Structures are given as structure tokens and as C-alpha cells.
Amino acid sequence: MITALAAAKAYAAQGSMAAPSLGGTGEAKKAMDFGSLLKSAMTDTLHQTRAAETKMAQQAAGKAELIDVVTAISSAEASLDTVMAVRDQVISAYQEIMRMPI
Image (cartoon, rainbow, N blue to C red; front, side):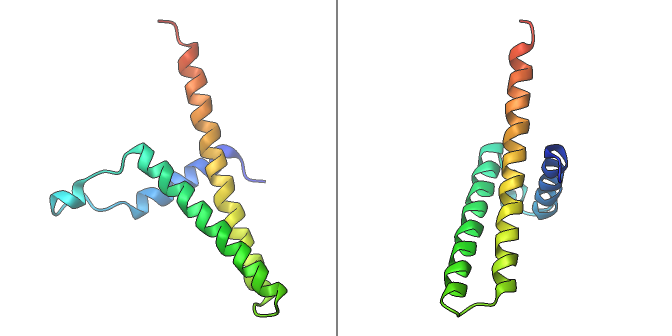
């Protein structure tokens, strides 16, 4: 079983690989803020879940292979686990900040 911290680190590593380079035009230098990153991750998870549902329906109709269905479900599950791990880390960080003395 993958731990929440390992999933969050893997997601962060994936995000840093897909980030634009620091050189070039001003548009390439624009950094993605945390809210946009979370929205993008949720959207990707939703698309993968819908794709898995579509594959399941196709397989039930006899139009898709079982391996494609299993792969789509595994991808959606991994994506959802990653989003949940990030959520858990954000909640943990928020709780830690709330415990800090003023």
C-alpha cells in the first residue's frame, strides 16, 4: 500500500517535470499557483474516472478488451489516491498552523 506522503511526493515530482522551463518568454515564466494546480489535478482525476466508466460500459457491450478496462480503472484509482494524499497533507498542514501560538 502506498503511503500518503509517498503519493504526495510522486505527484509533486510529476508536476515539476511537466512545469515549463524558466527561460524564454514571459508566458513560459508564469508559475502555476497552488489553486490552479489542485484544480488541474481534480480535473485530471475526473477525466480518468469518466474514461474508466466509459471503458467499463464498452466492455459490458463487448466493444473493449478487459485489459483496457483494468488499466483505465487502475489509472483512475492511482490518480484519486494521489489527490486524496495531497488533501490529507493540506489538512495536516492547516491543523499544524492552527496549533501554532500567536
